[in-house]
Image (cartoon, rainbow, N blue to C red; front, side):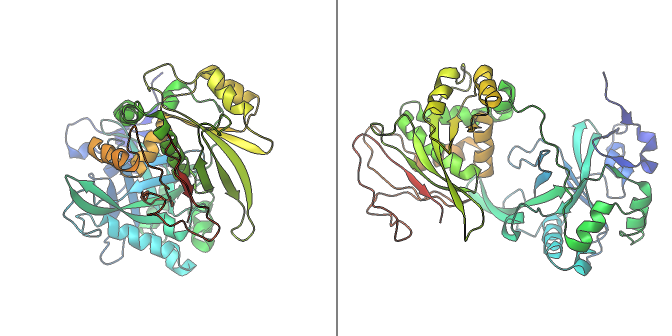
Length: 441
């Protein structure tokens, strides 16, 4: 059944309704742009606004994401309301803030003001998120507030380095929160343009954020907790990532255990430490470690066991037997982590969820997303990272891998790498195995 949408002729007076589609024109030129007809922000680019960045008179902002930028994967998480957006310095040769549309400078201004007092937050323009549907048609995805209650100020707006054709440059990765506002009335849009964003038509979610930086996020927990095969594997454009990982470790699956441990550390900041085990003493577990919960001064630590399987993403996936093997080795008050380049078969996945076994699954899609977040967005970058960080060899010296969040992995032999902290144990060479020990700084 075709999706109902607002016709192009009605856009100029239409309210913005969450997840509603707004039709573009059909005359075949830039004037068909739906966003430009809905709001006075222009009809081109992913970063659009009304006003001037230089004079700090921006009244409202539109972020438009097409989903076509493989190197810059804007992403909305409907379960938490978090939206990740990349700035507009996407090619080398420009300074971080020296962009044609001044988008990165606007990001810097908005996030700085969002962390200030209520008076300065009144200067933050409301941000409206749209995504491409097809042609000129767009979908309204919600009202955004800069920042997130789940992140620190250092994490909300981060300048990251990327490399294109051996040329290095910086761009912003920003985090917004989708507010629980089902409808943006035309009356509020008119008030914003008139310079009164906190007028009578202002949504309560925006008013509360401005007054007290309180995020009333649009959180939508998933009804289905068992991901299908398609949901576990990367999208077609990203399949090359896990295929490259599988090919790299096919000759040495032991090294894949080190890689799997690194991916688990990258995926969650609460992973405090992890150690890849000896094959003769692992008790059927490829790695063990600690997961930290609670305040920094008084945390609790949970133990976990990790299983890693480097399977072809185009194969049959991980079945019941391998998942049951991990479950049988989880001790009391522990949980399990299963990392694979493929997917978990439906029966195995469903049994784990229905029986409420404490097992986390990191599958092909998760690994691809993590590597892209780390900047592995082209084959050369990924192959270089794998070759230097996880060299595949028949005779490998033992080494210690020290991992910190969002940082490169430091490589070296035990005598070359001092371990942090007086309690850190020494690591001795192990015959026939390259162990890895990861600890957050």
